Image 1 (cartoon, rainbow, N blue to C red):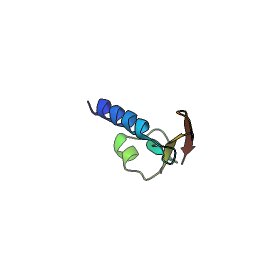
Image 2 (cartoon, rainbow, N blue to C red):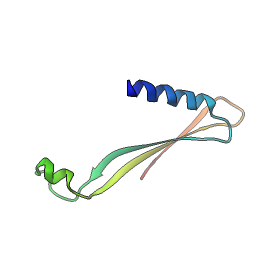
Image 3 (cartoon, rainbow, N blue to C red):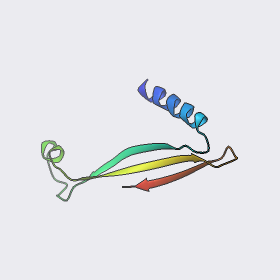
Image 4 (tube, rainbow, N blue to C red):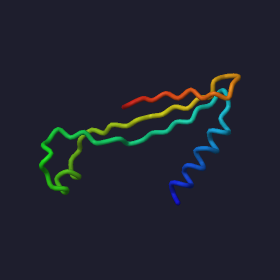
Length: 74
């Protein structure tokens, strides 16, 4: 149900988008850990590695209904 609600809100925001606005979606991709892969779950989740995020930017091209979509990894 949550995914259905979020998808419907996303579609509504895209339809309301004008030439001067943008919709940003930030998504957590993974946690980068510098240790071995042979660890218990408690050891794995207790670490403080750095995270990788992805950002999608949706912008409407001026004067058209076409979307410009760019992806950035951080």
